[in-house]
Image (cartoon, rainbow over all chains, first blue to last red; front, side, top):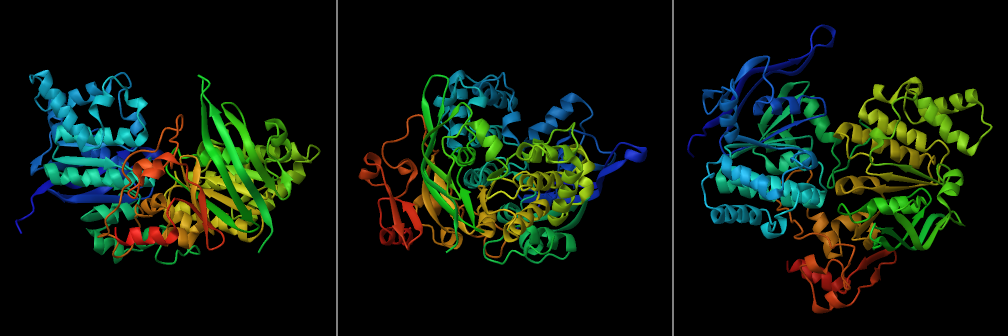
Length: 269
Length: 335
């Protein structure tokens, strides 16, 4: 097997909110190496700092301490232009599809933006339509039915799929999915996951799942990081972490998920 | 066999849109819950789970309208009652409801004890403030919540705590039926487990007569309820014991649902998830035949034309399909 290339890594990443009495360490001296083409899950309870870490990775907030390296180079997002360049490589899908879209933009505008961002500004209209149709058909949406509609006219599952169509056009190196399936029901979840996995095979990107659903983490990911109070307490391959957990915290988390083949022990709360 | 607490016969309710169209969100639903038992309702979003909950407690405010059918609680027919009468004599005492967004159900400007007073005063107008406080304290202690919660504001409580407080308030008057509409969907796994433990404990201690649990998380439903009812596009498509419904589903839709379960257990990583293609039908013009026909793998020409009735197998188990049990099993085996 060829040696795995590090896609994104961080050293001593720390984020502190507030000061004095209200000082909160949301992300506490976190180190990680995310390899290219891998699916990574970051699992933790609410308040464990998952979303703060996601914002740090996306460059939406600046770390208090520590550095993030993208493909071996130190990430530089000091100016807006550099930040936009960085965002060509890393994109995100958020938890709530209903608040992820600009409500004034129609769906074609949403997708056209993506084409323009990938240097397709000068393409003839026909080519753009063809690209958008292809992206929509990848996620089982019909582009012809979507033109002239606003995102809020779609259902939650459709919106989340449109989000994946955006990613299909943008072709980032890294996709950060922050609880992409927690707002949609279990039946559409399988569809969304299938599409994300298909997309990974298609354009060979790294996917970082941020989730509290251990079942999901176990099903999709190659490596799993367990987060508690801003620290990674356990990491390793999915089989290792989920089936043979070492830390008490991980054991407790796994114990708390409802099971169907094993007895679910309600006494340990 | 225990005493039947809740019996619903052919309940139909509809939404009326601005343009006068009728949308039958609950379509001839029948169910039965016995004392001390629980029923789980599963289904996709938009299949009428929450409307069923609202209809059961007689919460008919426009655009929701009652159409036909009976709701019998402990021998008393409450269908067709006025919402105001329902609030005074049914809610809290006979049926209690835990809303989906229990997080936001508590007014942030009031102490928790005020909600308790509100609930008790509606049913016992002469109740004394001190007596209510003591009563609430004992109840909160029995359900495992510190009584100090009563003196707090909603914003001072964590999400899981708020949810459990809402449940405690809902069961103040020992309702015969408790309807929990996705009580744990916004909570993380640990708080979810606490909520589930509390619900099960309430049921075992007899503080609630029976439980109707609505969710789309099947592993959860399997662990909580005795029976599972699967709804699709406003209709019941399958109802049966929890174990059978999960491990041996009959209706093709339930089969699809069970195929989308993911749990962190050994060996499940390599199982391929089976997503059901397509979207549910628009209930404005529901298909004349089987509502699932469009998405069904085993669809037959007559499925699309004729409406499909419910079939009964092994006594209590029902499903809605043109195929017999035998034929369905063979079809599943052949893939």
